[in-house]
Length: 469
Image (cartoon, rainbow, N blue to C red; front, side, top):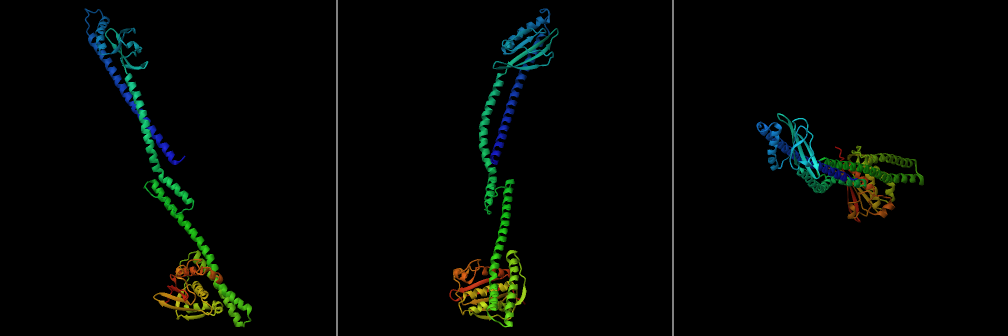
């Protein structure tokens, strides 16, 4: 059973119970009040009859009546006419239990048993469909004791009670129906936030982590809705962190696979040189040294990329290096590939010391020079120049290659994006290099931008805060 139905049924039953108890109590109070009034009325009649008898018989004329009994009969005979005129029902009983005087209609009521005291006793009797109340009390005369019994019909009291019960039953049905409608509306209003929370929970379970509920009140349900939103925010944040961590790991795998291509190209080139030609000892040592140094750089690069892309390292391991020397080291590594296309390299880098993570910055420069090499035709040219502006080091790498279309210029730093997909497959590119370079420049609090004209070449501009004073 739904929670809303439970609330509806429970509150409706409570309302019905309250109405029933309240109505029953009101009818009972009204009935008791009416019955008490009838008791007081019959008690007053009884006391009045007793007073009248006592007054008239108090000083009876002994010359007329031989004794009190004779006087009593005469008194009762005179009083009975007055009592009959007032529609009083009465019965006077002597000590022997014999009825001395009895009004018309009193025969319908059985005699009450005298209680032996002067205390007024009551009883309610039903005769057919009629109800009567009777009272009896004893009266001590000089020579005898009599009992005065009187009664009144109180059917109207019971009829009124029955009518009140019927009216109240109708009231319960009408009010209960109205309460049921209002209760249904209020129940729906009260449980609306719970229903909304249930739907939101289901949608979150289905994978929609952006769903939130509207906080409509400041009560407990409003607090629950607010806490639910907070929980959903925290859960979404945790899931995004997990997704980000997984994405970083995937990026690292892709990035590392891309980055090892350039060192491997150099290693393979020098290894092929050792294998295919007969070299003197110096050339053999130089080739072997390049293979060893690139292997070590590849090892260090894997660790740094892991820290940068997976572990989210915030600051680079700065080294103080000569920019021109670092560029020449990169060119020496790429020498076999550059010579293969007979590319003309021009350097315009003044003597300057810069601050950078050497392994990562060499990776950026190597990527950009290698991209320029791929972009130029046989016999093309690549120019590298550097300068300092304010606190920034600016390094330009310009080629006279095929250039980049304007529509693609803002997208080339996106992961896996390639301008010429068919040529990238031939050249061995995956589209990850520039995305990694951009990340490394951000790591150095710098940026990587491009200027290009289709058919005339491209300039890659590295800017970072690396000036050494």
